[in-house]
Image 1 (tube, rainbow, N blue to C red):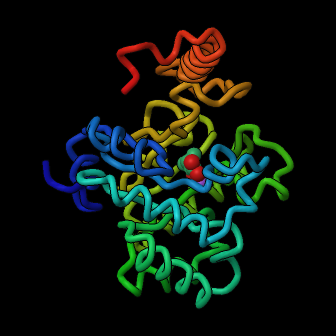
Image 2 (cartoon, protein in one colour):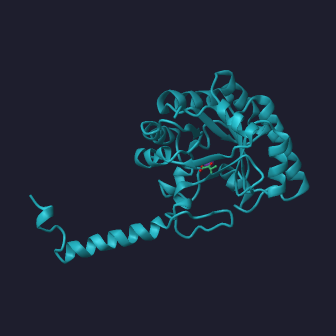
Image 3 (spheres, rainbow, N blue to C red):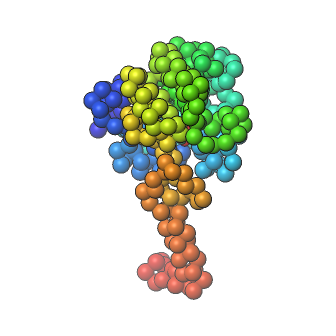
Length: 265
Ligand code: KIV
Ligand code: NA
C-alpha cells in the first residue's frame, strides 16, 4: 500500500485511527517491521543503548545515526521514517542544527527528524522547518537531558512542569511540527495535550488517551534484559528464544550432531 505521509498521520488523528510507531535501526528488522504494516518507524537515538551498548543516548554521533538511517531506508516501502537528531547536533546553534538535519535527510534518506525539547530549541526547529524538513517534537522525559534530570522517573507530575509542557506542546504545533512524542508523563496530562492539539500526539508511558503509541523494538520483543518499566508490554520473549537457539547450536556442534549428511555437500 502507499507510503505513509505526515499528512496521512493528521488525517488518522482526525478519524480517531490510532498510529502505531516502533523503532528500527537495521535493514533486516526494518524489513520485518515495515512488512508487518507499521505506520511510523523511528530510528531512535536509543540505538546508543540497544545497538552500541552505551548507558545513555548521549554518546551516539550524527554519523552513526546516518548509518542506521541508510540501513533502515533500504528496507522501508510503506512506513514514514523519522530519525532522531542526536545530542549535541542541534542544541544551542540553529545553523548547526540545520546542517545536522540536512545531513540526515541527504545522506540518511529519511522522511523527517525528531528533536527533544520545546522553547529552548525553538530557533533550531524554526530553521529546520524553513528548509522544508518535517520535524517531530519530543517532550516529557527527554533522555538527552538525563544529566539535568538525574533520573528516568515520570516527568511533569508537579504543576509548574505540567504547565511548561502544555505551553511547549502548543509552541511546537504553532511552529509547524507535524507530530509530538510525549514520554513518561501522567496519562491525564498526555490526554489533555492530545485533545488540545490538532497534530498527532504519540505516547510512550503516557497512557491510552493519546493518538498513537511508540516503543523501542528491543524492549517490546523481549530482547532487552533487566528493563521492565510499568509502561512496557512485551509481545515476545526473543531474548529467551535466542539464548536457547544459540545454546542448542553450540551443543549440536560439540556433539557433532550438526552438520548431518543432508547438510553436507
Ligand atoms: O530513541 C527512541 O527510541 C525514542 C523513543 C523512545 C520515542 O526517542
Ligand atoms: Na530518542
